[in-house]
Length: 219
Image 1: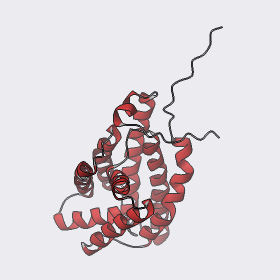
Image 2 (image 1 turned 45 degrees about the vertical axis):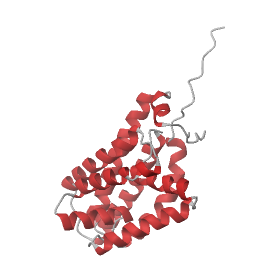
Image 3 (image 1 turned 180 degrees about the vertical axis):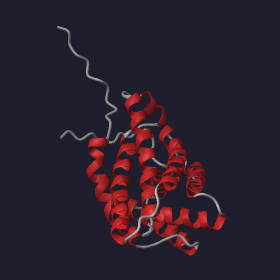
Image 4 (image 1 turned 90 degrees about the vertical axis):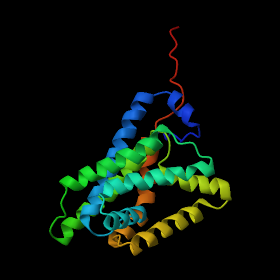
């Protein structure tokens, strides 16, 4: 299997790079599936990932839909890119809107199943789908999500390690979300343990090359 590495290019270069149509379709599919996977984990009612614990806690306190909070928090996080001098790509902006709309749609049509076994199956399916969806939208090479961009921007500006910055961010939002009433549980642990390996396995084949198309010789 050929593994295509992620390219480090500007948002403008991302749009000028080859295979834009394929990459746009993959981006949209990845973001919609990502929102759907969040809805599955939400309806499993066994705990959420750290950022979604925060989203759920805020939604409960503010009386807004889960997806509306996802969009609002994404937009606020994107504002934090300004002092970090981060430039959002098309995928970054699409991430803010599409995931929130998709998760509200998923929550509207999925109900929490009866029985622990069914809820566990919904949780595991949501985590696996989340890994695939993340690989698809990251692999489209049209810009990171606002939360990932915040992490990489802090790493670049502070000189701290990715592990330390990511862990600090996720522990902070998890604690705040828990204090607001967000659901922490088995799903939180399963997600934390599984999502890294899942994306690591899926990302290489989901990454679309930005290299120019080879020119076929006519001689």
